[in-house]
Length: 208
Image (cartoon, rainbow, N blue to C red; front, side, top):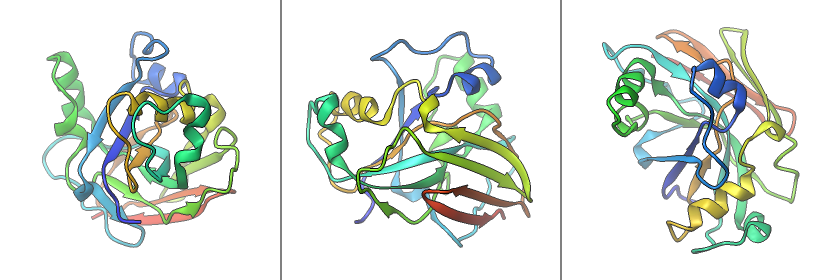
């Protein structure tokens, strides 16, 4: 299924919120949402070309959901019927720029939606696996940086889909980056980054 829109959820793991020194997190029903264009996608095996001279580029490992569509106002108890597949991906972030934008009260897109900022592994079909029982890790140059469990999400996948559908009519090929656990950190050219999960497999990229 060709990629359509890329929806991203911010501040969805409490320990990640704490590590970035955010004051609290969004109340239920008001999660942080931003978007990336399709030019952000980087398939496994393709190089991740990091921006130059724009400050630190951080990795954020995430469960990624591919949607079948579903339209508007999807009830939370029906939301998982709209899931077509799942994989792991990276929400790459220009951290210094994001911090500056936050302080100025400006949107995050300049720090989040640059070309190549959404590497994504191959999608595995969704066969009603428990999306809130998925473990995943992120290694950089063989060193463990992040390990997460989707049960720790502040906004479960079904809740995220419901919230998005209140604003957008969800379409086939829409992608959902579901938020990152703690342990985010910098990438530099030459780094090798590997995302893995017992359920979803292993995906690797080289940074250039």
